[in-house]
Image (tube, rainbow, N blue to C red; front, side):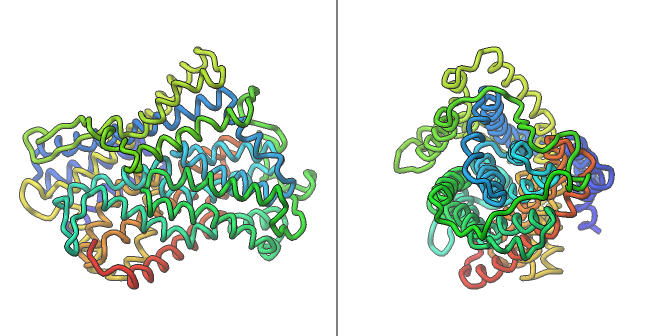
Length: 555
């Protein structure tokens, strides 16, 4: 009975978002309200503890929202200045083969924009660009959504990992002693990111091949015809996922997507330009007069719909993102000595409302401030953007993040309440009750289930970060209860949350809006679900094998 009550807030959110199509900004507050009622009545959680848990969630949400604001601000300024058009223009004339164009725009550029901005923007930026190049709008929407999954494991500056799993900090007395070594929470999160990069390598490397197969099939061909270019597609996948995994392992979760995409993109473009890739002929869509009516809507293929007529040189266009990558590298690699300085100032609240709960943030170490907002101040000068357009970008971004703010605050508030329901009385919390129930019925098969929990969270909430916030503590508790290693279990959750990005309603609606096909949501999701399931299964099976072979410790 307690397990049913503990699951009730999540169930309500799922029903409201899937059954009634409520946005997360409306559904999350309701789910939070249900969690408050259940915590107060079934767990007898005092109101002061409920308030303290909610405040903890607000502080955590502010930390994440600063990054969201900074990333979206860069994107908005770059759109207005012509920077995005300049970046896009530098990519569009490399090849006339639709398969190669798709790999450059829908794969590498989507991965790049996920690392630079994230939060649902990459596919919405890339899909209209493909339409402008002559791709059918429906196919452009499908392939960009499929691509915007692999890079989401780390997203913009690692937020899905270190921000999504931040709530786990309160579940153990960090630092821990594991096999004679001291493990801090920061080291633990880095380990989760490193393992997530390894788990993402197998399924993620196959995604470009899946995308080409889907595109060729939708374009009137067959899956077998899509397989003709399999060496190039696999190479494109590995050129991103291998650097992504290596950077996650050796540096941390902030840079894998941004730097991995840049490294892979440069190598792939050079190989294309010097004709070093086996392309198996040339492929294109049927003539426009043979297109099914469902392929197009308001926006017609061939209309360059970037929302900006201004263009600047590719060098100036790429400069802000290159500088961002360099500053992130310098600030995250400890050999440069900048990390302790940025972490030296923190703002927080200890013993919130007289409870044992505490939360803090380190503003200067937050990527939203350094380097995003810092670079945002220089973009108008670099790109000759007038002050009125630049100031308007700040205002527009502030309006844009309001729904995200509401959803994040109440999602984190819900999670912190569910995590701390046992604090005052010493009983098992709502999340621990759920975890013990899941562990009792699954055992080691949980490795295959774990990615699909992440997929469900992203599908419901529209965000891999929110999926990790909602289900990260649950996955942690399930691993402990089932005596499974925690790090790979959370890594599977992280990859699953990213996989769910390709079918989450929020992203599907956003992309279809940009290509003028609102109303085709069900069709797009049906096209993407098979890839989503295969990706999730491959990740779970590989994660299971890897964990059995290489993980002996609980952490």
